[in-house]
Length: 207
Image (cartoon, rainbow, N blue to C red; front, side, top):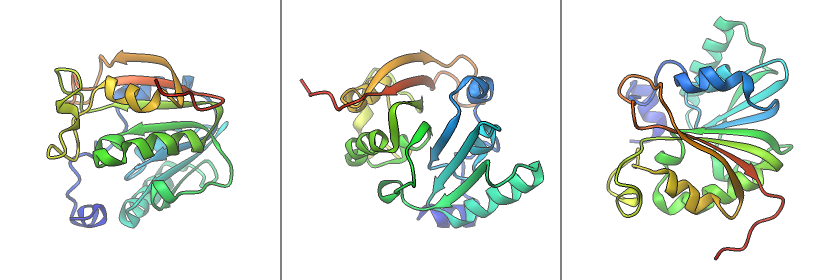
């Protein structure tokens, strides 16, 4: 079943009906400027990140999810120039300008494992040099990756681990923080880590 079909059928168990508590707590302290939320669904995180000093863009494959976002945004009185959702594919998305901040939650874990390297490269291209990538790592499975974190039969969502993100992001980003989340939504306790990364000026050599 496609993502759009799931939204049309209301089969969206990943949708919390709001943002994760850790984002609610940290949103104010994150950088301003242009912000991207890939795989945003109904755009709860787009709305949470919206501030006068930010232009927040959500991206999702589902037109149904976008329409839901637009209704919620109107109810909250947030202007479109501050927060909007576009329908499109992350890997072919070409913005008019680079972003200062990208927030990834339940997007990386929804991708087929073979797309992860392309995901990291795309994140690098989407952010300006020195820009910030936030990865809310979920669903974390112990023992640490590898090998089970790459099980192609396990998702989506595919189980992940902070080391999996490190393996893919290290050439493109400097790790600034990776900490276990202590306050999560019900059912997600102990399965989330907060990662913060700074985009390198140039791609580092592997090995």
